[in-house]
Image (cartoon, rainbow, N blue to C red; front, side, top):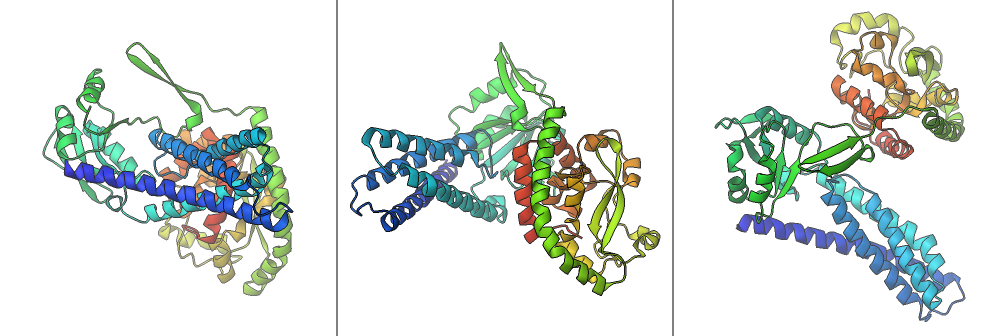
Length: 474
């Protein structure tokens, strides 16, 4: 199979190149430490312990990073930006250096911990962000995406392909599908046409003839022994077998697996909304809001002057919103529309471009010139940190809805009100107004059920990047 051999060779070269780049970046960080040491400390430049210490750290860190990265890929990290291999491998490298320093009385441990480790982590993260940005800008067939065959019922196959196509982080070059009700028909998803290559009994043959690297089994297969026979038939085909499940929107930390005779059990822990969890979130909100209000107080006079010069009316805009458990509060924003905005809404209802119960216009004539600038970079929402300090909002959470929107909520959507609404959230870093109503709701519900301090900090950092390069803000 020359095509498969060519693909596997390309993947191996890619991994070797990635390991070489990681090793180079860690080596540069260690070299910077050595340079600073020789320039600032009285230790002679020819200190015999300097080179062995750097070699131990670089070698152990690089080998551990290669192993953890491969493990993360095997466990389904896909194209996501996974920081844990970097952090875990850094700990392994420091631990190895600490042991060596204790055995041989080296003095380079502290400088490497203070300089090499943070500098190396920053360089590795930057390299992965650059690579991830490049990969997302290229179609799947131009990257190292595996050749994939999706197997199952037609409805299950369509759902799986639609989910894979919608998320560019998980790049798959989908060659085609094998369905239980095999026909010669093809189907179109996301503007792309996918072929039906055969039935379930032909998967192993298709994997070899089409040089398939990944077989994804969707739902809709009634035969309980099919998966076992399929795994046997794929032996020697250099193919990975992946089981797709509709158990979505559940964080990995809430999932555990257990095996028994002839059955695999998946444990899903339920989301927690206890007092200790909410207190932790509240403490984070108070710290972040307090720190944010200091620079906000410094730029508020300049924004206020710009708003006043641009259009008559007050600087701030208050609007009734719904918070946690259905409690109402007044949200605070910098005014971005004319004072007659609410009165003019009725005449603009016919052109509503918002999703679901939301009212949005990409070119809203009520938005002022300064208001358009503030909205584009989310500066109009800065006063909401005062709402956070008052306990009415959170820094991160679902979008705060209007009372009229809540009145149109269906049953499941009310789960958005289990936590405080946020200034930012998954909806803001994922497209904002460009999202459909269902996408927005799904992101909010995912956040509500999988909240953690780490996820909040991650969203806050990603929000800063979105503000610099806004998308869907209008």
